[in-house]
Amino acid sequence: MRATLMYGAGDVRVEQVPDSVIKLPTDALVRVTASCICGSDLWPYGSMKPEDGPARMGHEFIGIVEDTGPEVTTLNRGDLVVAPFAISDNTCQFCREGLHTSCTHPQAGFWDGEPEEGGQAEAVRVPLADGTLVKLPVEADSALMPSLLTLSDVFGTGYHAAVAGGVNPRTRVTVIGDGAVGLLAVLSAKRLGAEQVILMGRHQARTDLGREFGATDVVSARGEEGIEAVRELTGGHGTHVVLEAVGTMPSYQQALGVVRPGGVISRVGVPQYEDAPIGMGSLFRPNLRLAGGPAPVRAYIEELLPDILNGTIEPGKVFDATTDLDGVPAGYRDMADRRSLKVLIKP
Image (cartoon, rainbow, N blue to C red; front, side, top):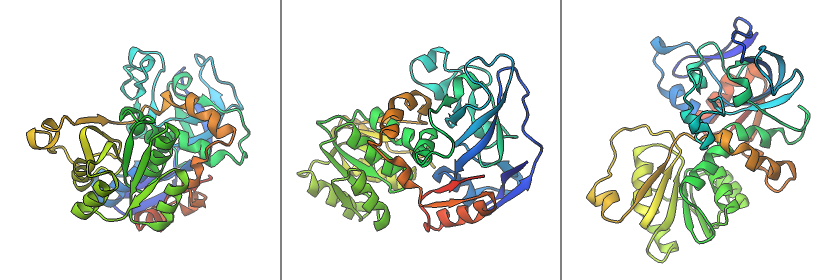
C-alpha cells in the first residue's frame, strides 16, 4: 500500500510500504477515505533531522472498517469511522473522566508512537479499536466529510481550549492564531456563548473565516501593539480567557499581555518551549491560571457530532485545498508557506 513518510525537514515522500494488517485481537483494519495535514505536522517539517526519519505521518482520518480482531465487539466490516489523534480504551478511569489522552492502557498513546502506521495512507491498523474509533451515521461520500474529519483533531482541539478555559456567555475571549485550530477555537467560543471573541491573526482570508465563525473583532498587530489593541477593545482590562493556538514563546507572552486579572490562558498550540514566565510578575500576582493541553477529542465527538449532522456548524470550511496522496508533499509545502490553511487528503 502507499503511505506518507517524512525523511527530514522539508522532505516528505509517498512510498510503497507493507500492508497494514491485524496484529492484536483488539485491532481493526481501516481503509482510509479521508485524511489531512495538520498544523502540528509543520513543526517536524521545519526541523526534523534526517537521522530521526523516516517517520510515518498522519493522525487524523476517516475510513471504512475492512477487518476486525476477534475481541472487537462494537465495530463491523463496512462501518464508517472517525479516529481521534489519541489511541485509548475509553474505559480506564481517565477515559471515564474525559481525559483520553492520559489513558492508562499499555497500547494507548498517540499515532506518532505507532511507527508502522499513519493516517496519510491508504490503510491503518487501529489499536484498541472499540475505544478509539467512533462510528459515523453517514456514507463515505457525504458532503459532510470535511466537517466530520475535523472531529479527529482540530475542532475537538479548539473546543478543548474553550472548555478548559471556562468560556461561557459572560466571558470575553481572545484567540491567538489564525490556523485551523485557532479558527475552530473561535467557533467553539461562539458555540459556548462568549460575549466577545477577539481573533489575533494577520491573514485576511483566514480572519474573514474567523468572522464567519463568530469573531466579533480582529487584531492583526502583534507584540505590544497587538496587546494594546486588545486592551482598547476591552476597556483596558484584557479578556477573561485567552485561547492560545500557536505554541511559541511570543504567542505565550502575547497571551500574558491580553489576559485580564483573574483570567485563564488555555493553551492547545503544541509548546515549542519548556521554560516560560509563571512567577510573581506573570501569573501569580494577577491571579492568572494556565490550562489546556493535548485535547482528549474522543470525549467531545458525541457532543459535537449532532451540530455537524444537522448543519448548525460547518467546521470543515477550514479545508481550503484537496489532494490525493500524490499531492501530499506539495500540500506540506503549501501549508508551510501559508498558501493553504489546511489540506484535505482523499487517498
